[in-house]
Image (cartoon, rainbow, N blue to C red; front, side, top):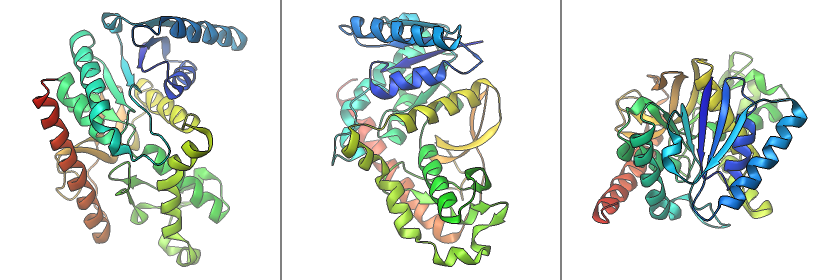
Length: 318
């Protein structure tokens, strides 16, 4: 049985993620962590969740704290803390402010819960995953981010809709940055086990429009309802369950990649990775030549921003 800790638990994503995670059979405790001054809100969220547990017959323990030493014994630490995007704001605009929060949180994890696995959700997620890796001191296999997992699910849903098949028949991935330089892997996309390029309907597929829809999905939701909540929350729970159940699933997440994709790497970015109770392990793959070019450009973009951000944190003596 596992203890899952959520930093940023008073935010929309953190609160919903806590509720979905509480349904995982392997979880015996969910710990909500918030800032000092938020005690009343944390208490209220915990009380409300306890009522929902009673209604569904769930015995999961729900606790809250503003004291970081309480994270001791955590198996997974989910970080949703930081400032969310506003309409029209790029994920990268959030970088420095959120990096200060993530650096502090990660240092605390390295101090009080160094056996834990960190799941980073805070945007820009690829860069924040690198910050968490740097400041926690944990092994790279124990630090990963939501990355392009949700983007891949969004593309999967679009393909299923256009081909009029059940989503379980579609297997596809988006790698690279969780952002404008993301790379759809059409070379690794199948429907019912058939390579998508071998299906005559593929030539009529509005590929560019589909990728634009995936890229703009978060912005559209934020514009219409203020925040993305349900999609990220369910995706977070999927990743937590994959770890705790030792499922060995291959999912596309932000992980530290060295040379697994055409010898391109040395950065935290979205790649296929095998996920189990021991952590997250990027899978060596070979992709289409044009996809290699796009992935290399995405890596260089993220690597450059990451290096600049880490240097800025060092200058501030964070």
